[in-house]
Length: 230
Image (cartoon, rainbow, N blue to C red):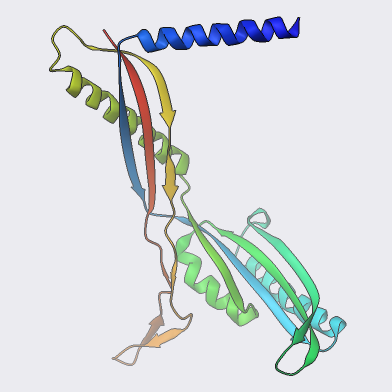
C-alpha cells in the first residue's frame, strides 16, 4: 500500500512540474540592500593565569574573574546579558623551560546594548584583570526590521525588472508569482582595535582614545522570482 501511495505522489509531482514548465513565465533576480550602523556589541573577554601548581593557578583565576563579574554588575549590565562561556584548567609543557606548568582560563561574553559605554568598559575590564579580548560582534537592535525592508526592496526590484522586460512584448504583461527563491545574507563589520589607554593631546590635556571602528552592518536580500506571463 505504501509503495502505491509513493508512486502516486511521484507521478503527481512529475505532472505538476511538467504543467509548470508549460506555463509562459519570466524568471528574474531582485536585490535589496540596507546599511545599518550598529548600536549593540557582544564582547568576548578572557582571564588566564599560568603557574606551577594547579590549585594556585585556579585560585588566582577565580579571584580575577570575581573582580570582573563584580565590575560588570557595577556598570549596570543586566545579569541576562553576560555569561561564562568556557572554563579550562590544564597541564601544559613549556618547551622553552623544559618544564610543565598549569594554565587556568575563563571566557566571559558580555552583551553591551550601548556602544557609547564600550571604551570605558574595556579599560575598566583590563584594569580588573582580563588579559585577552577574544572577539567583538556587532549587532543592531532593529536587525529584523531592516531585514524585512531589504526583502521588500528585493521583491520590488525583481518586479520592476520583469515589467521592464515584458514592456517591449506586444500583448503580454506580468502576472502572478510562481516561485520565489531567497539567497539573503548579512555582512557584519570586522572590528579594528587600537590600544586601550589614554592619549596625551598636544595642548597637554588628555582624552580617552577611541579603540573601535564599528563600521556598518550590510544586509543584502537576493531573490529569484518567476512570474506568469499573461
